[in-house]
Length: 433
Image (cartoon, rainbow, N blue to C red; front, top):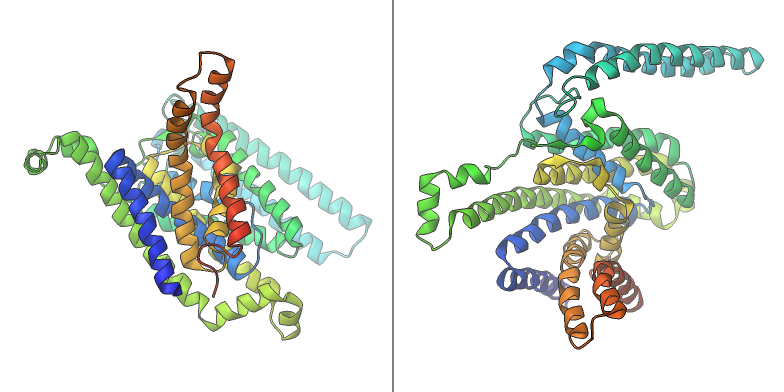
């Protein structure tokens, strides 16, 4: 079959599956799949840049997605003025002392000759800097977290529009990716995977334990939104009358309206990123990245700076994951560090890229939609199938076990889908051309 026709048929089939959810379940469920499918497609696009273009094995996707969520809080939430008055200056001072200690240590290593004297001086500098940092930082943290801890206990954000949080999420993820890339991109792919996995866990641990930053595991709720609130729409007489003429009640209409508005915003972001990724793929830069991916030694022999090019694409892919993380937190209207699990935000995104077709941006998009659809719908279908299987069984341990196993159906399905694709279409549903 013609590749264009085949790809069009795949996207049409995906749209039909979502429409079936709308017809047989609810249009709210269908639009929720669309919204999360768009976000998943953007995450897969970021990973496809790193793996499909450059062969970088990043297993720390979860950390960059979480940084995007953190950026949403830091950008859109209003500042907590009492917390800033109690310890804001001390926190900033402590962070500056820590940064100054690191810079001084780097300068000392560069300026002094190797030997015992440099080792002693470096040790003394780091110990003194650490003691001073903790002496300034810790009392300020206690003061900030003591400010109305039930609903505040953190510094808040900048109070900027919610949409601005999405590019800020990308910038924050890109900045952290630069730091990671400068230290880890010289490693072999397996060591890079271990390093990125460990750093992602560190990012999540910091978000969970540093309450002054974003309330830690106490979560931040009620984040500002770029779309209207459902309750405001339900209290708008014109909105209620307009939808009543079409036979739709105000509650259903308001939820559909909000989800459609989010879908429009997310689709606009995905289209812009997809166009940019396609232009990059077919540019001389994209061809150089694929040449490096296919044979690093040959590319290096041709004068290409492999490490610098890897750093570029590592930052770009991580920034896209950060944007997706910020969008997801905005959609949820809250930040909860506990939801960031490697299975959902790393393994599943990798499955999307592999199933869709690594090295092909459209493959990443269809993979994002398809895998998220299966992740959500398999449990619903599994419950129906299990009820059918156990309908004739007497009550007992076997029936109870089968019904309880429905919750694990999604993991089983992911494994089956991955195996089938690797067996019958190893380059993915839309392979690289």
